[in-house]
Length: 183
Image 1 (cartoon, helix red, strand yellow):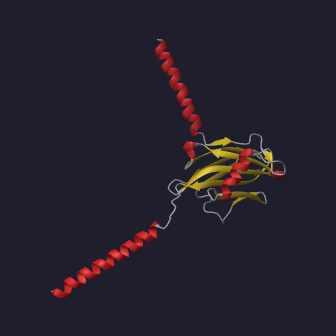
Image 2 (spheres, rainbow, N blue to C red; image 1 turned 60 degrees about the vertical axis):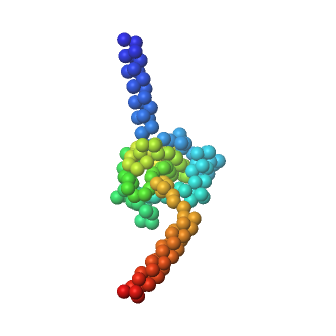
Image 3 (cartoon, rainbow, N blue to C red; image 1 turned 90 degrees about the horizontal axis):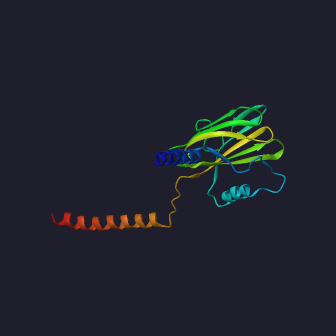
């Protein structure tokens, strides 16, 4: 009987851990922070990733004259992302960028008076997911940032393959041309 109880307890605990890993958003700056004050460490790490060209803004929705408008200058918009205001300081966000070559990594929330919150996207929801966001003051802008699913660097191998293919074609042309002359 004790083994059965232990097994059920372990299963429930592991299910809780898996569920926690699949939850869409993790608040890296609980309670928010002011962009006018000293920045918290998670925000500095977030900004540093832009400098390394690993992280890019994928979509942006901002308040304009009482309405939220999607930026036309980024790769994605309301076709791949959702934004639903549930209160002055809260909203639900969602994304579906599966099969686009990108994954969602962070949601940056800018509130009134230069307040901000930073959320990290959970492991199981990088391509399709969502969650609730909060700002200590009314939300003014939400920036969805992510990374390419794979980065393939080319150190000249494409040029080498092209040169090899041209050389092979030239060699085959000579061999075939000499055979055709003898016919």
